[in-house]
Picture 1: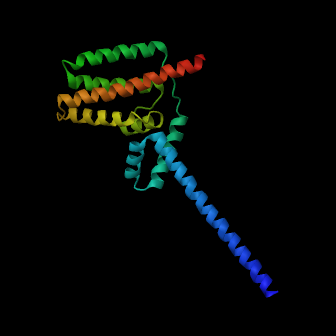
Picture 2: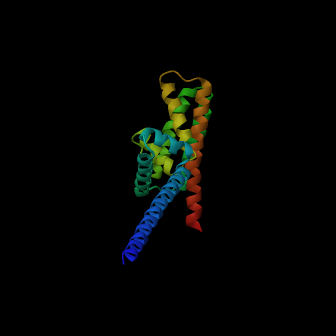
Picture 3: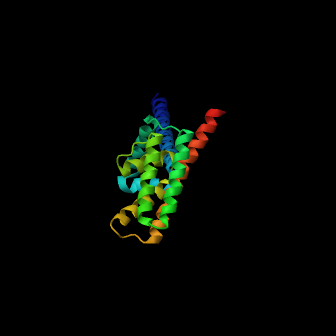
Length: 192
């Protein structure tokens, strides 16, 4: 009888151990998948930046998930064709003014990107919030946006070279094109 009880007890202990090991393995697997999904969605640079600012991977991933939820609740919309054409014309003017007044053109480009974002439905109150919101839908260009903004801030203090300003224009143009390209894709999707 004692042998049966100890055998039954041993089987229960082994069963519980197996369940615990499987649960731990599942938890690790799901964490790894979540990390890979977030790193893929936000891009390696934005993911790493958020981890560094948050202090831990867990807090960073919670922040990234909150960003997704926040942006999903926004009413981001495609630009109507007339607005899109108007913004393209405004961008051409900004580019043309770069030759004579590069600093002023960078300031205008920054404002024009904000105007496009506002027209699409993104809140535009504070830069960091704008960058975080953009990171959800446009992870490949958020780094460009951050770099352009940093150059614009340096330019306002008189610390940016003409080459820096040219680079800022390239970065702003990348985000501008991405915001307008998404509008074209949305229109095509709705037309189909």
